[in-house]
Length: 248
Image (cartoon, rainbow, N blue to C red; front, side, top):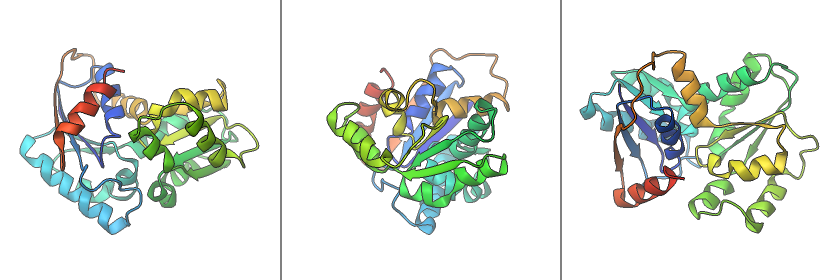
């Protein structure tokens, strides 16, 4: 299969990394809208317009599938993208909800949802989990995590103080934390230390792999897939980050 991966910027590279580790696809086209990032602070109408433009960008590649790595776009524009695209479109929010349901047996489990302002305001994760019977949900806008990751601050005092700021009112450790932004998996090791080993972290990349595995036959593995990177601005910078993130 030949697939496209769309993200508002560089965060979707964490999803690409999971796809590469599981050797699912023969060819991957990555497109990051780096000229207009971040999407997490934009209104719904703008997010939908940008998402439709991304579908149009992919048309020349004759894709078999589009993966929307951006949680914000998955929350607001998946329907419109599906209406526009000539191939299936799958988003990370629905995959994240499914992964959480599969990993937690008790619907009384405490679940913490982390994301950008737009993703949290959409309540997409909460709606999906509530429809699956989960009741103890808490959502936190943690947009500073995006800036920290892009500054390559993956540990240390600044990050720990940011954790304390965001999580100071959490009295009981959650059974699961949904990393509702593709930047956040870069902080997973420190988040795991903060919440403890008993807390499950839901990673968009691993969730999408699980979701796809239920829909497609991946018995044939692709050890050396072809991958192309495109960006709406400064593609060379995106390629440089991809080289670093995909090898760590």
